[in-house]
Amino acid sequence: MRFVPLLPADRPATSAPGRRLLEAVVGGVVLLITYAALRSVGLSGTLDRSTLLFLGTASLAFTLLRHRYPDAALLGLAALVGVLPSAAMLTAIVSYTASRRGGRPWRRDLVLVTAALLPLVVSEVRLDYWQGGRWQYALAQGGVLAVVAVLIPGLVGTAAGQQDQLVGALRERTAAAERAKRSAENESRIQERSRIAAEMHDLVGHRLSLISLHAGGLELALDRQAPQLSGEAEQLRQASRDAMDELRQVLGVLGPLGRDTGTDALTDATGTRADILALVEESRAAGIPVSLDWQGEDLTEVRPQVRRAVNRVVREALTNVHRYAVGATVEVTVAQLPGSVEVTVINGAPPVPPAVTTGLGSGRGLDGLRERVAVLGGRLTVGPVPGGEFEVRAILPTDPPAAGARAEQATGDGPAPLALPAGAGGRLRRQLASAVSAALGLAGLGVILLLGLGLVQQTRPYDGPPPVSAVHTGMSTSQVTSVVGPDSPSVRSAAAGREPTRPGGTTDCLYPYTGRTTESDRLLVTRYCFKSDVLSEIITFTTPLAP
Image (cartoon, rainbow, N blue to C red):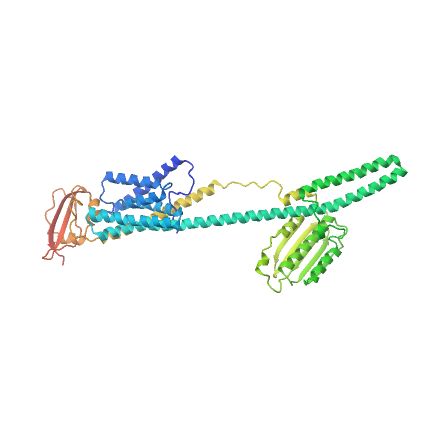
């Protein structure tokens, strides 16, 4: 169970004075509730009001100092709790906070162990020497305070701090992986833009070169036969040259045009049945059993950019088979449908599972395919299908729309989606859940504290009446009980009818068990009589032991 303090220390303060005031109020409420709970069972101690007020104020001051000096605040409260058990819950909060902050493990452990020893030492000094109690009882009470107020919240805080460090490391790794993924996607887009730019240059530039060439020939012919039209032909040739230069400038934004496109250069046969069959034959020669199912007419009349996309889909799918499914059966289907071309590449499971490292590809080829297909207004699906097979399917329109809007959508150059801030309702719910968790954690520690101190108090042995300096007239019932122990029904029964006369105005008397007997085997009884909850008489007498 994770213990969350009511006074969190890991949030940046938005208003320092207001935050300190709120923490002081909450700390005071916790201190008063703890004192009232201990007082209700006779465990409030023998301190007078002025001492209680001073120690309570010091406890709140140490609690507020836990932000800047967590170790010092913990040690100070650990010493105070040996005198003022009501400060146990505040000590638990500071112990949790100081341990959760982390730091060097050896220093955190040293502070925690030292803080756990302080209640033992202070309780021993206060109860054994100052108030004349037995050292075993003092050690037991100090042990309960050390475990409940220091060790339990300290260990929980240590675990929470380690969890915070782990979550922080995971967040950093996730952010780094996300940045690497975005970088890879951007690089893939840049590479694909370069390929698209080169192909557009090869296609459109080739056509413009033909226009310029024919315009030059026409200019020479008209210069001889119709000189008056020679100027028009020259303007046509110059316009084609200007268009070529402008095309180079525009495509330079997408990618470098001076690179060699190699085998990826666009030709009139790219994407046709003969071209796809050549790709299939290359895979067969490499040992991949590939079959081609061509449905419909050839793609010679389809736009070049669509044919190029068909070539790229088949090429990339077969390349992935060569990498990750060597020896698997592959079915390539190209179907020319009314208004679209559907390309499907399905491969079965490989005879031999691929090596583990083969699954660590960058995925840039598929990212490039998605961008190319999206630019043409098509759709690409990649993934496993029933039967253990893997499918790459692309549906391309034979008459693709204008590329402007599609390209912007595919490449992500459009406006980024608006990131809405987290709702205040969700933040409020998280804060409420933290507050409830903190209250439950403190309540659980409070129950353990009451049970522990109550058990120690009930089993406290007494060697006789305490010294006068410890119990004196004028003390309240709870103060006397905290020193001499609770009332014993057996001692009260033994004293009935045999005790001295009670003083006038007595409202109640306390008969604690001392465990002392005289030489004649008579029980030694010390009676404490009260007038309106104020000790008025202390008398010791003997009575026969109960049969």
